[in-house]
Image (cartoon, rainbow, N blue to C red; front, side):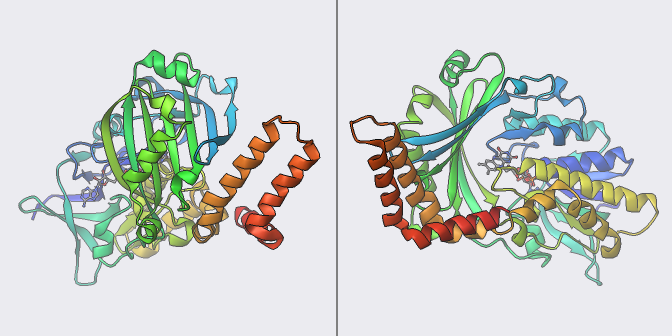
Length: 435
Ligand SMILES: Cc1cc2nc3c(=O)[nH]c(=O)nc-3n(C[C@H](O)[C@H](O)[C@H](O)COP(=O)(O)OP(=O)(O)OC[C@H]3O[C@@H](n4cnc5c(N)ncnc54)[C@H](O)[C@@H]3O)c2cc1C
């Protein structure tokens, strides 16, 4: 056993772990952070859109030093059928602001940079070290961790579990249940490299401007899932993910979906001639509010994806991870400054602070949407995208058919596919869940 005792041990050096370690080190606490990857970012997968506000709270001048790709000036939503997409695009010159709101990033680079800030703040960061078990005392309090290093038991007043979506430590120690297949998505992602000018021409960009595309529809073959295409400086991140339960039910494969997505006539021209240099796969927590586990206990707190804090509707995860990590660290700092022990009763302040933040407020707002999308995936991800695409084509195609007849035909196709009661029911269910 290592004799040295720490104020806090952070397991994981992703967005949540780095935010927690950085904040606690700045509070003057003695922090040890353990990461199984070769370096922070080496094992992390993200699209990746970075939300500036949450980084700014950690490193106010991050824009001057962090490795950022492009600032996002345009968001496209595509509803796709096999040959078309119906799009809603929002592009604004306002996003060419002095302090842009969103950026595309490459996690391997960004996390490495954020980790350097953690080290500068005074935390000890130990990579290539896997935490194998949580150490408990005879009263079942978490008192530290065991690692795969020799003499690997290390003690601390509190352990921050930032081990990501598939966090086995918490489940093995009985602190929470394993995520079920209907609450996690499996996503695959590729990085397509192209010359900078080609990307800018294809996406109508200049300088460091960026575009992100979120896509849903028949690309997921009736499963609950979405695709994405994000423009970086010299590469395009492209991926697709669906609920694990849906992959199990349908027998579809993630790489099969990705292949189809890349061959879609709206997508293929964007990546034509590119060189794929990276391929990755990762789980995403998608169960929302109802799948959040117990967030604290005797000597421990859980943050980020390990706590299922991911807003699948708005495609936000890293910002919830960073915010929960920072808030947990502030709560721990507060308890420490009062000279009190890290008991469950004291650590419950973390949950109170998180409840008051956008993290829980947003997840609570959409608490009924993930199950609705899952149980009605055939309608929302297959039938409606096909119907809407046909209706749009009918609307824009000029062929001598009177407009009134066209509208009647479109309406008839909706009623034929879903019936009046089905249409009204779907609209009400969606409105209720959105509210
Ligand atoms: C394909 C994809 C696209 C996404 N796109 C976006 C996006 O555009 N924007 C956005 O905001 N979010 C996005 N997300 C979600 C986002 O990536 C996550 O919400 C975020 O990474 C969560 O951060 P985290 O620190 O909680 O977990 P992670 O980033 O997963 O970090 C967990 C860390 O813990 C380490 N670890 C695990 N177990 C151990 C152990 N036993 N010992 C030591 N270390 C351990 C891991 O190696 C890892 O480094 C996306 C996710 C995926 C998969």
